Length: 195
View 1 (cartoon, helix red, strand yellow):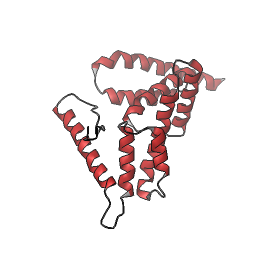
View 2 (cartoon, rainbow, N blue to C red):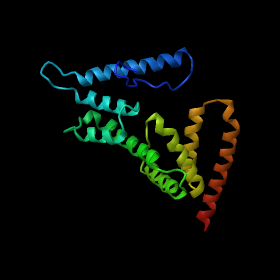
View 3 (tube, one colour):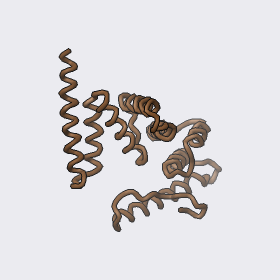
View 4 (cartoon, one colour):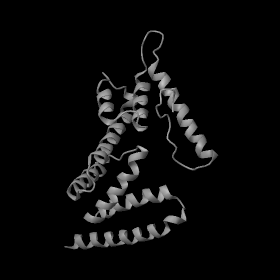
């Protein structure tokens, strides 16, 4: 945390010296971006690119909410061409995050509507990149793809989890079970195409 009590980094990763060093580096990077974003140059101009990066970092750390972040983003008169890609990714991240936070997942119909919306994002190649939303995104894609028989989406979600888990033996059985589901989905898709 900084002197104002704001989170400057969240530890995700290994619980060893290497993992903690990465978290410290993220905190240092956050402070550097904050400094560049909040201090003007000699003629009173602010670095818009740094202000955008600072906004995104604050949102990802939970120091600002989606509603306020959208409002702040709308206040930029223009987005530098060099930042258009990260701004578009940011909008996708906020959209996915809003779906996760605004959905009553205990309500079957609401959960199904949210899954459809997330699947549409997947089909439109709007995949979130924020660490906090990526895993839940692929979890919902996997669930929806199994239910609606979309083998390609199920396989992409499965590959995401394989990459995430690496060679961790604790997930071996889970992956074996999901591979069986994938085989069934591919078979079901072939049968559908025959009809």
